[in-house]
Image (cartoon, rainbow, N blue to C red; front, side, top):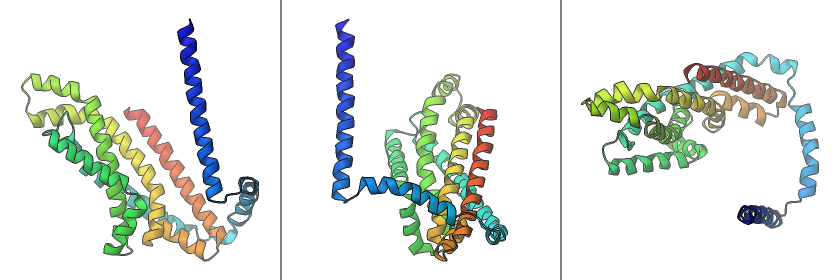
Length: 263
């Protein structure tokens, strides 16, 4: 009976120590940055009150809705197209790099390295790098979203293949099926629901990220947001944010319904 009690007591001490370390790091960081915690927390209600008053849509901002929706549709199209192209590239690369379907361990290591490279560079960094080469254009935003999405999807697709399709693939190989028969008749049908789920998730994510990319590249809804914000037209900014929220929630509801059907 004493062993479980000792184990729980030791676990409790470790948890307490971790919390104490995190708290100490926060206090030290606040001291280094000269951050006044009391003033910061007491200013939160005032900040939300200011946002509610200044960002509340007005009759004038409602008249801007056609232009806002036009740019928002462009942003959604940009996010969808970049995600679809990234998914096709990622699926091909993941099949080559997966332990279950790949060529060899060397290719597996190289593919994982490529995925980590693209995934670990922030979207803002990709947009800034590409901005120097392709200037402010929709193509710059498309490439930035594409490169980041490829990194995430390669890693996700490789794990899906290894987790879900290994047994089915081995069964078909035992019957003498060729490599391409195994891929097209076993692997792809088995993993397709999970692939679609990941693609839907990345579309939702990229619609939000495309707003930030648009601010940097001067395109889509991000350009409208930045224009109104710099013009101090906060009511129009509020209307833009409201439109973005509506689209994001709608896409999330639709993707959840699709997941219920396919999974």
